[in-house]
Length: 337
Image (cartoon, rainbow, N blue to C red; front, side, top):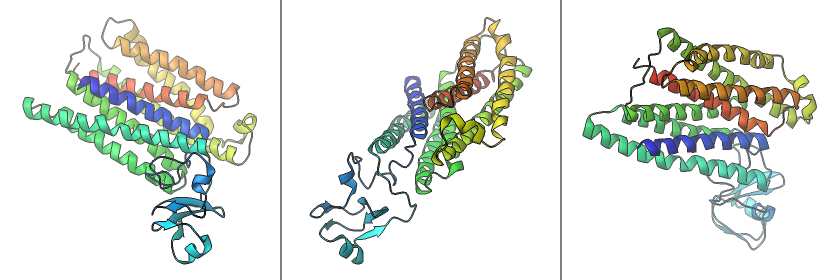
């Protein structure tokens, strides 16, 4: 079960990365409906697949683009006369949003993101079953409780994904969607910790626990702020602002995100530096955390100096999530001290 939980952690991390790539490429509406894509299980690859064609058979639920509008087939139909079929109620305009653009690259990027997300449900269900069996056999129910929490957040994030698409990428809903993925990772970390049942070699003092909690809270706040900055960047790009001028177009509050990184660095170093000099099991967590911080600083500075290159966004987000998970893991293992 430990190995399976690690697999689930890796898969969920890939979902976070894939979601970031979706944001980077502007592919969030590549599939305008959910859970299918243009009413298909396998997404279209060419424009004629989402265009009305006479003599073509369309199943109920199939989605097409015509006159800059998205249309949904209400029943199976053999296409013959589109205006007449509209009058007969065969085709109805999609009303959840007004986005009606087909880009095959965006469609497949979004589809792969959804596919990876759906596949994470497989280990989640297996973990739930195994943890229940372990709880029944050994009377150790903590892994099962957290497996239930993990599955709950997984379902919640899937539901939120539908709402994000239905709302045509409502800004703050994207941030909540990302936070849901972070909570999934945290729940998996607790599952892994509870099934390991290992004691750590060295104690972590009360002050250290406090600083770990503060560092984790500030890192989470910084993560939320960063996603909001990214939404502002997306809005500016949509307005036609070129990347070299993005920083000047951002609202002043983005500077809180920039300056907040120094506060996060300070609180992280408060607990990291003492652990680097100790021969304890938590030392490795401190080493990994320091490495992630250094890479994150380089990526953040590169954002500013290189006019916010899109390719750095997934790395920047994944590093922040990784650091938060390391903080959370350190908090978990310090509980027995």
